[in-house]
Length: 219
Image 1 (tube, rainbow, N blue to C red):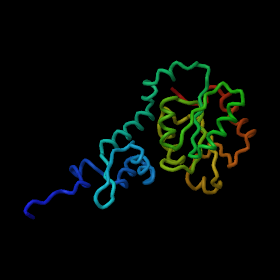
Image 2: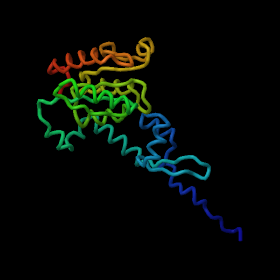
Image 3: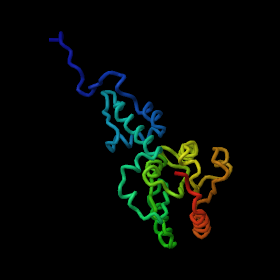
Image 4: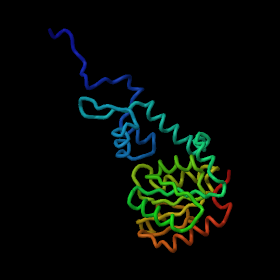
């Protein structure tokens, strides 16, 4: 009766070259281990648990996300968004990135009352912001730095390294102290506001940037 061994139903492992661990996926995607777990739980990445409780992620789903990010940064996603293309040419676009949903809503309510001819687009972390930037080609990015997944520092480095977005205006709102921010290599030309932000000061800077006309980005 023991001449036939049955494989464990909890371990439908395909070839090892077709799967990766959560740690490997995090490295490939440039995000935290926790972010990969959240994407698995949310169905963004295809995965299952082994009999030992370890997640195995299909590399095809990881590569799909990498391709999506690259397309977004290259601006390819904008071409597939007819609604964005149809927006009035006079309207400015601001992407705001923060992992605190309550703060994002507060910023949205505050900025909407400034009378700006601008659309506010919200993003929950650096990776999400890159996608929104690829879709909308904003005039300004306002971002936190300490976010899960791809943080603000890595996001800024990614943008500054890309010729399409290297000159895009950026404002940082952060709870980190100035010494820490400087040590992490944030470019010195990016204005930094401390949390909780003083809205009159933020408004003055936003109006200055948007009033500069071509200061946002090159197309």
